[in-house]
Image (cartoon, rainbow, N blue to C red; front, side):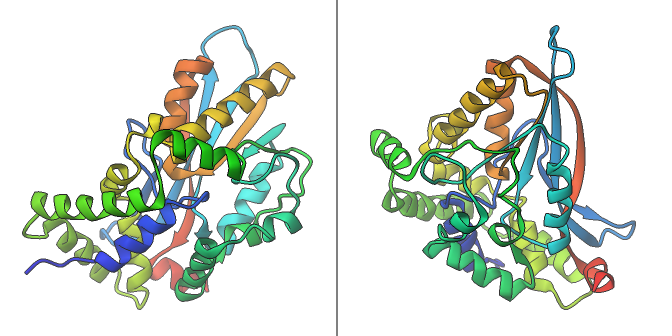
Length: 293
């Protein structure tokens, strides 16, 4: 019998198509993982803060890729707010008109899919990024496309929600063909049961969020897509502008789905090299979540 979770995968895929994505694409650097205790029980969904530095004479420059999951524990966003104070400039994603975004204006941008995310926060006992992150900070710089720019970019590439839906359908069929006995699902189910707690849905979704090869098939090649590639290029353009203006310590706060492609662009276009990775607990799982209450 195959243990399949189509509804959960569809929800995660649906959220992947929003301007604030909660999934990731696989790459040479790890950007999201499940931390486990010494008994192999899941303790946390963790997001990476990956630091890149120049390999030339630009002393003092460092760029952090701060992966975002857009629903998370309140403590996760509190830690990010503290981290963001340390940057000269924090570049953030949000498909919105050009110009500084205040917390009030960000709140007004919550649409249908964001409402879906808010519903998940209540279901899973989490908080919503747009409610927790302080977008009023002076060092916050918008580094994303406007709605009209994203629409134009998608049209140029022949992309649409309709196209994404059918890509998702065929990706699900392909996934079944590659794993007809459902071993991957069984392994995730084993991890959920090993948690030994009543937050099975939260733990299950956390595992799904670290196994999103299907979403790559939905979005297409990262570097060529509007949802990933075009928006990442805008972030790199803004980054180079801020470096030229004298910023030294810079963070890029984007959905973790964007990170592998952003990392490649930092290497190829900005001339940076990998330095180190630190980890932040985004969702406490299992006994850790119960203890934290």
